[in-house]
Image 1 (cartoon, rainbow, N blue to C red):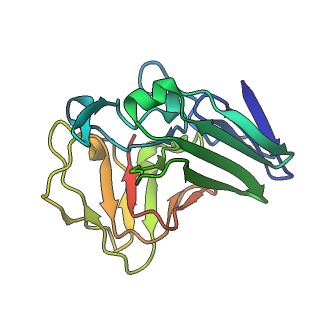
Image 2: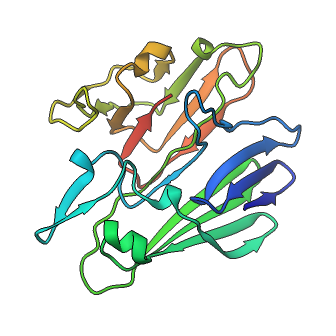
Length: 240
């Protein structure tokens, strides 16, 4: 089921499956969110919990017992319930069940809130440990945006602008997309720009740390741009 929140600037549709945004439209009706494709990527903006990335053989060991979990955790596949809703704000909640405890043996509550403030979408994650032992988890957002944002431009017309004076480090990844210890300095044009090219992602995602608190997806040839803020998150992943 999909729910809609809106204000004078934006209209956002969110599915109960994964509490995933399915559409972001401005007041002119322009769609900014990737609409999914069976040929490439069927999702649009999954929420990643309780793990981000791949586990070796989809397996991890906790307290001597093996558990199995697919890429980016299970939240994106689960049905959330709506905790509360207003015209411009909605909160979805996922709680542990028999299925999640097979993969992740913790009692938890995972809440995702979307709130509109003018032309911004504020996304807030809250994770509650309902048990008594230490609960290990990771989480992240995975929004896909329509690039080019204008029909007159191409993918290569766009860049990602970083904050001034950041010095990103790229996390080393193996050919099968697992983390290694071979991190290296990620060079930006003029110290702040990453110009988009399709072959940037030939080896899957680019994972960076030390990237500040925001990036801007923009083109010098177009008016539309998207700013993504990620305060208190230590890593930025870029993928297409």
